[in-house]
Image (cartoon, rainbow, N blue to C red; front, side, top):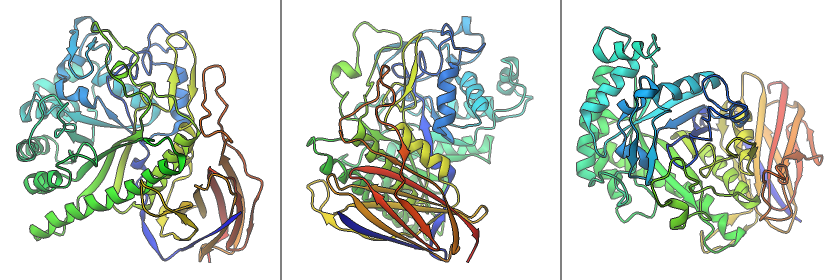
Length: 506
């Protein structure tokens, strides 16, 4: 048995939690779109071809914003190919994933899907093979009310009202050697600046994200962000971060260190962005868009990334997630919540099939992967403001990160409802944790609404089509509330959510 302590105070607030941190990602890659969210011949498809079973699971997952259409795919994409009558849309070779893109699903289909699910769309513009002119035309098509060639074309395509897309990404991973149209930091910074100026001229209300480094390990990491923001600082609102967690040592304890590395990554990029602001004598603060993140390490061979013969919607990087993957995803969500002052959007990559929390079979069933649960619970209960957590916990040493606390936690409080939610990860793999929580100034009369745990004795346990509930949340009956104090017993290697409500605020 180990003991830990968590203390928060109503007057010590990190920031209001931007609900857009619970975003996901839909890319034209593998089976994410075709036989994922869109399969007209599926027995459970609606009249538009959207899989209703996937829509229901997406509602349960609870994403607030979804990035589209890529990803590496974006850097070779012509947005015009995906609008208008489907029978007139061209098939193209997708050089990012060596597939044939049919363009039967495009801008307007994605907007309709988002609107049906009450999800905000996040769009990207191609700055690999294209540039400022195509980007401003895309914004005009999507957001201008009417009376011009492109806005009237959208109306001819069945969308009288503008799409009013507010969040736009200026390209994707433009520093990557694998990227179509890769650029140096100065080349990209300049084109991002000019593109942003034109896009804002069409619609001044939009928010724009510039590309940060593709990974924390890039040789140009840090210097890339500095040079890019030196060029486009005044015209962008966000810098993007991408990361994929790997279990390179096949050790759960080491795997947990990725959570600490993510926190360091965030703080380093904040420091770089603020140094640019200082040089420019600017009070403006660039926010962070963690618009690609997930666990990904098992499906990384060339056979997982490419299939021969230019297939349509092949099975690519269909990672099967286990218990330890779900715990790391939970820890990543805690980390982003605890950095709510600067992390304002984030996208779990991707939504369906392709390293997704949802899996499907063509013509068949859909089910939840293990990582589905921490995300859905964080989105469901993550409302309000993030309080600064003071944690006392035993620690351990690892090669991934020098000192790792067994307790990883975040506390989100909603003054409007009186609901306070504790998200807690016990990273000890053999010992239960006695957790003592103090909610200072948040109300002495409290009720315990829910106490949930995600735990399995086998860290390699997975959910499958045949056994979809092998790893699933359960009630934690060993939680009690007395005044401002909560006591909980957490199982080894477990993700926990404790929801309480104050009848009156202190």
